[in-house]
Length: 390
Length: 239
Image (cartoon, rainbow over all chains, first blue to last red; front, side, top):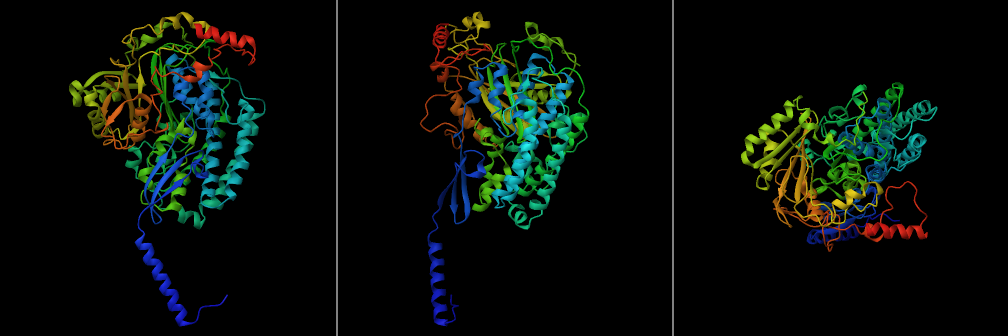
């Protein structure tokens, strides 16, 4: 290694460099870059075609359908209890939460209400799904920005939550536990105390994330002011969940929706952030995990006694009618528009999944950003491909 | 509170009129605003007090409805857009359920094409658009329906009002064959570009069920490969 000291050599290098610059300026035609379908930021198989001008994105077009399973069609040939098996697999990281709005829609059509104990346990499992889901996001967000440690922490601690879900439902990812009129089973013995222990671990995890990620200078500079979504744009695209709350919209169906869960009996807070950037989305989710821990804590203390199943016929026929029920799922608003003709099977089920709307903003959002930010923006929008493709 | 209703009773379907006593000022006002703005564009409306609201508008008033909802009713949140095919499937329910065979026979393929019944807020045509918008401040949502005529219906796109409708309209286009005028990029969303047919139409067969009929809702499934399995499959096809 020799330092360049000869002035003639310096002049030569400078000349080369200016040539290179000229070349770059001449070649201004865009480049098309394929991100995915198997990029780790996509939680499944989403392909994004980005047209680049240098490092800047001129246009981005997501291509979906690699995982389209046609659940809306399949639901039309399955009885109501069988449909929950399918919808478990929509957002596979928070499966139990998927079942809830569908079951609530069927219950509304049948005019059945689950007994209080079932509603409380439902809410517990609903929030545990949220913790299991969003904890993984918090770790994953780090990975997308080059920090690998958080994801190991996330996988480690999420396992405890999944164990608790498994102890009740028998399934780590696909519980298939919610029934029209209540729940399949009651809580096992000793579960409440164990779960409280797990909540402690999750709280510790959140503190670790604060230490490791939130305050990190690189993380901040890669996320602050990146991918800003103004509230009105977010609303017109139908964004929901933490994505819209990070744009300062104070709206959470757990508080504002008239749904059949017991969030209204708990003491908790809806977190919002005024910035609307990637950091805000991360930050709101981190607070929501903490808030969910607090909710589960209160829920576990107040589970009423009684049956977990209302009286419903063994073969379920849902009276004719239409119902739309949406809940605040880990990824955002998930709703089912159920059309019944008084049959054993739904006539039509429209699945309104959160990620579909959340990702539909990407062509607008990615325009004008830089390539490395594409990944961090996608990660911060947080979608599950099963939730887009259905 | 545990209301133990019997879902078997057919009377539950008409309870809307019976319990018309509770009023829903917020949703009633919403429907009134729409009626005022759209005039004859609003065909029918239905408010279930404290639960939900539906309106049915003409296809010509489809975009105007969205504009009115967004600008006058603060429905700034676009929720979803889809469609319903009200023509019963010529294949029945593709269910070999033993409990309901007489019913299955009644909606067989010989039913006349115009003999379908539609849902809340009525309907006259086979295809019905279905969309939902929400007021994120007043916390009220509304479902908008619109009848579309013809086998390849066309309607104006909402894209100028709610940009988020883009993918939903593409999905409705490929799944139901409903075209949206002024949509900038009406191409397949989920399905490959050479795909033919509209899978969510009721007359589009679910091939998995054609190839191997569903065992039905019996609890005990036969072992695969057994003779009984094949026999029951044939039986299912015959019914």
